[in-house]
Image (cartoon, rainbow, N blue to C red; front, top):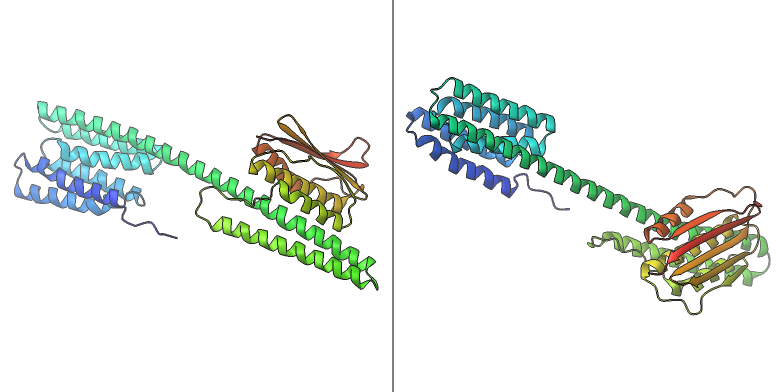
Length: 360
């Protein structure tokens, strides 16, 4: 991972620009030599402080206020040299600190300007310089505040994107691991009770378990590759309509009797729609294996631009609660404009999963 530079180039250039442009406007009034030396020293000292203003905003604001106070005290007129320092100081407070500190900084700048004007002869140049300095401070505060709000908005969007990606990864991991482990557990348990001296049945069961485990391992690897990719959008595993027959065979091999009515052929649909339908069927049938107590019926039909899915199976009294998988399915369906519901029927004897998924 690349580290951010401690000295951001734009801020370094800003500090250098202030140090180069400021002193000439101060010495143009031909002050004493010690004043000229002090002015140059102040601006040179501000360069590293301005360069660190993103990470050390409080230090930058404090140093800027001190520099502005010194410059107002030793130079007779408020020219651009003071305006530059005030602009950087107020902008740093507004952009990098809180609104409270922005108002405190503005108040201190205004107080320094008023004091500087009060203790000097009220010449037109002094009055104009004071007004311009206050205007510069106001503009700097406004632009800094806008920059801070834009940055906070971008940070919120980034946090939301990361949260959505984490949720997507959680759904993928659950769909891959929970389904596969559930089927493997049922297969192993069934072989233990039904195998006995039937070596052929045990061998077939072990082969199915190994095949399911290999498929799950491959999908986990694909997910890891997608997570390591540089794409801005997370590339999820592409299990579409063509994988549904394999899903049904694996569930049937685990011992669930399935009466399936599927579209022939499957309609054209976006890959995201296909993945969503695949995941709904996988999770619904896996739950029928783990929690059901009888054969399941699967009905998938196309009504116009909508695909309707119904999975029904007998359920025991102890398995009437929805889990993480069903919550993930509801999120998947909602993301593409569909809806999903999973609950016992009015009699409480059958579990019914229904979903409506738009094809486009």
